[in-house]
Image (cartoon, rainbow, N blue to C red; front, top):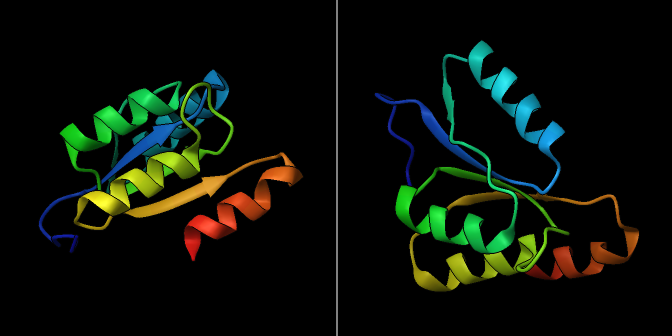
Length: 103
């Protein structure tokens, strides 16, 4: 998906840690070029909301309850138009799985 210069970049955040969501909301209030969607706390909700909102960027925790961040990214990639996805994790054992999605 090409990002239009006439509107703010829409960002959807999926993370089960409320501190991350609040931090992102604070950042969005400081930014004039991005609009942060309400963050969701599990992968299934992230996937459902991404399908509805059609964000420009997804920021996903790999280890969310239910559906992992990499599974959300893979499902959306298989459905069509691309979205920029950032997946992060503190769990070193998940790094290979996340790299496999990037490939």
